[in-house]
Image (tube, rainbow, N blue to C red; front, side, top):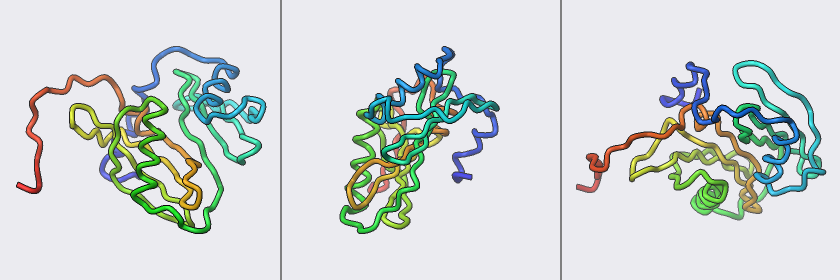
Length: 179
């Protein structure tokens, strides 16, 4: 449970994936581009069935596991069991690194919502922003090693579950807490 914005997960249809189906080779290529690593460093582990079919890969040199959706060929998650040690980088800087990562990967502008630290790794939850409106249902999680600043994890279930083209009004009332 991810708090008040996870009720949409009950629907089980990921709106943000598109409809084209990809092969395992295409999924591996998409993952290679996403994590900026040579395809030869990745091993196919399994194809999963269920609500959303995925191709799961292990990344040899980093020890990460990653899943790419069969529908749409989107990187769904990248998991790492790496534990940081020394917290050399502050929470705000880590949040900025996470935002920059998502911008480079094509997710557009995001805003950090909340974060959680554990053993030198911070998980930053970021929500896309469109027309100054924060799209909380579309949260994306990014894990940052607080020692090196490396992005070591990523999870986009809420994003792919909810993200779709929205017809947002131009003139919405924006609450300003300072007024």
